[in-house]
Image (tube, rainbow, N blue to C red; front, side, top):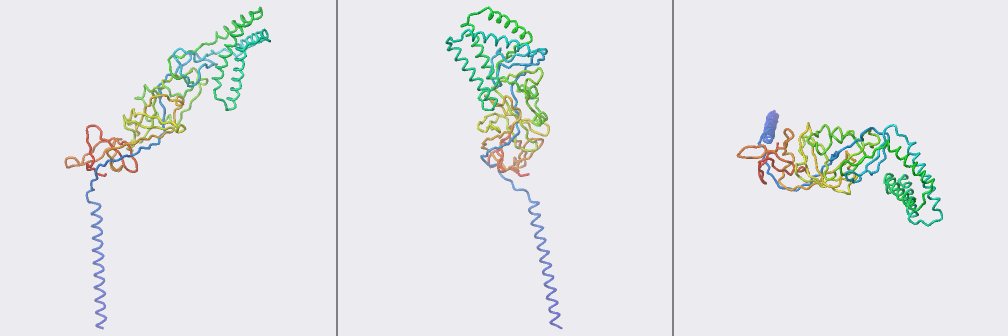
Length: 401
């Protein structure tokens, strides 16, 4: 009986000890949690790093260009300049024909010219004409080139071939007139040709370049809104709308609009980043840009404008030099790359307020927010630069929000 009472006392003592240990453990656990939760966050310091900015964007091309219209609506146009040609002021661009013109007038002129050529060739039959023979060989070569172009294997456009053919035929015509004797029939046909040429030209008007530059015959309807002289008026809404829907159509289907003259010495791309995100361009900094489909070429540009626009940041890069195919490209995917070396902080140290980036530093014994430019972010590290008159230094204490 006594032994049983001693066992009960021992078991009760063990239970009291276990309970006490559990309570002590719980108190210690709560204390540790409160220590880490409530203790002041340890300050970190500004470092010095090199990072590579690698930013993929949807870019919209902006050019310095002027659109020109025909004086009146036309139902036919003959282009004498090729897409992308560099023209001088006053150089022939196209010939337009007013409404009411029919191809019968031109066909009648061609028929007369064909009869003239036939008589000239007949009069020189059996006579050696090496200059004319050489031109005829060149004409045949151009016709073969046209067939190759139509099958997708040519090196020239049909417009280039047509213009070259017109030039060769004009040279051949002068040579024939010089080497053939003007018979009564030929003289009559010459007069008829002049009459039919005047009849055609009564409906026609030659359009010459109003200024020098690169010529294009394609339009997307955004030439006025997206122009180098209107950059201050470009908004995030405009860029977003154009990136969703923008397609080029040829001048022959645009009514009165006929051609554009582009100054390719300077051009821009615009793209959007979110205002709540720190990564964006820094005005005045230079960047290397490659475009999808043109990866073999790199373009070097400078950030011309970086501004808040609605809930976005509008970024604009300006380039100098030949724009190539970009005379008729509006939207394109691109990649921006640039190495930056300088003061650095953890990306999580950056706080965004009203679209601007800040870091918190210890200054005069208290926390102070400093507005910064974020040059680039890589692997959680941001290279920064103080804005305005603020000064930052390596080793300076910062606080993580």
